[in-house]
Image (tube, rainbow, N blue to C red; front, top):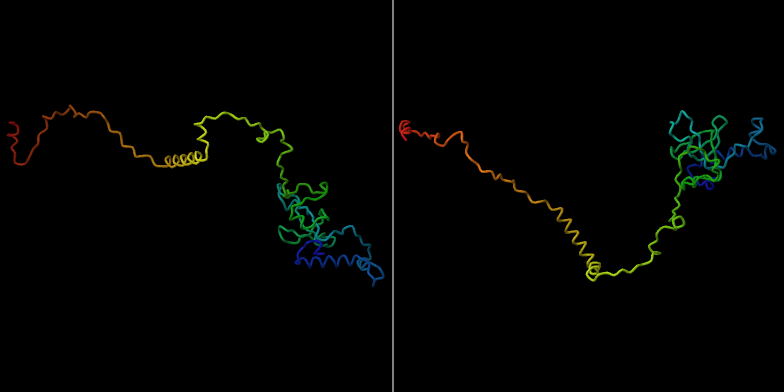
Length: 232
């Protein structure tokens, strides 16, 4: 069962419980072909709830467990049966735990490998609505079929125009290298800091104020007589 479902050995307990449930729903030789569950309960057994172990399933998320913008279902793996009250046992690969639910949509032709590859269910009508988009491999289209009318450089006619001898030298390989070198020098020149500008000096002629004449200035020194200064 684990090999067919592509599940790791850590699910051996779930596989064992599922095998026991299937045995109890199968005819038994010691009971003369009777079904053990029918023999114990006295009720007819039903096989409508049986699913492929390890198949892909989508579990509905109740309203009280999600917000308005959250997905209404989550992707799980079917790993066993519960009683009528708890429904199916499913493995949530995101939360990494076992959950129980009765509101489940199964895809019995897919397993955990399809989930890892990001494949979508084969029947889109049975695919639950309002699911988070599952990433799938993108188909690369070069657009040749859709854009045949676009300009193709290879299909355009080549027009030979006369070229001057002076201009032909500029398109040689050496000319290209020189142009690249010149551009590099220009970039370096632009990156050099500009020379410091000297402050502009005023050209206005400076004149002393006419309010005070030079004749009014007197220099007094120690030991000189003020009267002598006045005589001068």
